[in-house]
Amino acid sequence: MYLSNKIEGGRFVALKIIKNLEKYREAAKLEINVLEKIIERDPHNEHHCVQMLGWFDYFGHMCISFELLSLSTFDFLKNNNFSPYPLSQIRHMAHQICHAVNFLHDNQLTHTDLKPENILFVDSQYSVIYNPEKVQNEAFLLNDTTVRLVDFGSATFDHEHHSSIISTRHYRAPEVILGLGWGHPCDVWSIGCILFEYYAGYTLFQTHDNKEHLAMMERIHGPLPQKMIRRSRKQYFYRGQLVWNECSVAGRYVKSKCKPLQKYLSSQSSEHHQFFDLLRQLLEYEPSKRITLSSALSHPLDLVKSE
Image (cartoon, rainbow, N blue to C red; front, top):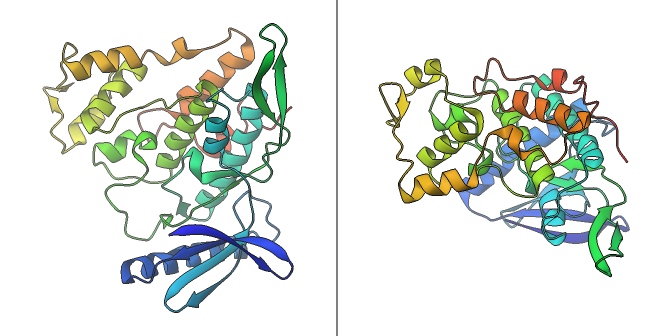
């Protein structure tokens, strides 16, 4: 699977090509079905989801054409030497992301693979910030933070079979790790991880191991709820406590990489405190208590504002 460009009707489009293998073909058909539903429910492209222009079968290879977009929010961050986005720009991107995913949830869909790589800028042109003290260019500042949500290959309708493991590791919600089942709130958790990454310039949960992931969560958010621990069938706990040795190599790694959420604040301004209040609600352990995206959109932070 890869992206290519071609000219269609005198303009460039993005072309997603899926290999002629049965399992990939079936997955492509499911993605096309989701994209068609999005077009049906959002004919004027008002909900910040990528627009499918059409699809065709080329000798067994499924091909889907899309509006041509620019860099992903991750690639821009990487190209900018992982300098965090300004909070004003994060607010604008957050509004669009929450709006797009709330639209999916209203239509009984869970994206299940939200991450910075799956959020693309419509136009990633930028201005250069010059630092006169260092006598050098310091960072890039986007001219326009309009984004589109992409990659609906794993999107799942509420009535469909729910795979036990979803989401890219770093954005995976605790209920998924604990095998408790999942629904729309797992997308909300992923958005919290994404917004933190925009703010800090690095991933909140940098790990590839379930138990280490849980240990990071507890160091950042405090102990997991006993209700969730009791329901979990995973062998990560003993007598209601995570089996974890803080003196081990992994334990020292977690201790060095993670700290309570509020300690990541880069400013004591009310705006930054409001942003972290929203993060705390997006990253609530209990899915039933996690903020909904409709509520997030009316949070005092006022997500719609931008530079």
